Image (tube, rainbow, N blue to C red):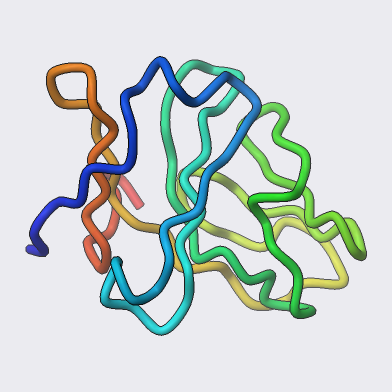
Length: 114
């Protein structure tokens, strides 16, 4: 289990928006995008689309999915599953929680139920 990283106060990330945690801070090979989904929950995926070098944090968030802004590949926010072409490789999902009003990211820890 990794040590948690405070990303931001939960009310600082609007629903439908995302922020990135750089790889140096996260201790990972890729930056991590933390999404505030339209269902009110927070999710985290590796930021780089598995199809093309594009930031998923810059994509569109809707119905529990993020759509890559370059070629419209879609990924499940909960599991990172690639949902349509051109992506065929899943994104890596990370555990994220809201603790005392702060969004806490646990890089390398899989989210519950994934």
